[in-house]
Length: 172
Image (tube, rainbow, N blue to C red):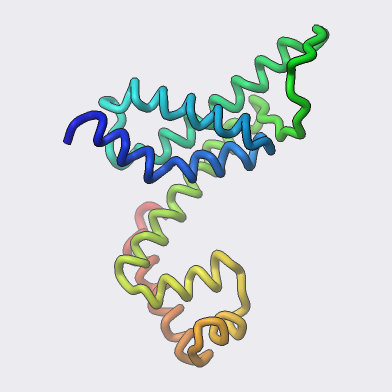
């Protein structure tokens, strides 16, 4: 596969995720789009050194670093009048919570990996896990939403959790 094709495939797969991550932290759509552009420009430059299984964490870490750099630039400008600076409500990333952010990125990547494995193994398990664990519905609400009995939901939820424990025991 050529470099441009590989890049396009990765871009289509992760663009929304990187945008969502940036927007969640910047609370500004235009800044988030700019951040996504910078992240994928850096990815294109370094894509030969990023392994397939590390693409997602690499992109999210790069996005986090772009956001931190953005706030550092704003901090340096404090005390100077800058009429063109956008007024934005922002969530500041400090050095103190950088480790926390990295840990959250790893947790999010792990969660996505688990959900993908469950979906591949059994679609009904995935729907139940999504409803109960991700959307935080009660078991009664999830059973009603999925159109199954509570007993069937509990049995499938048990099997899905058992599968997750067995498959991801070492990573978890």
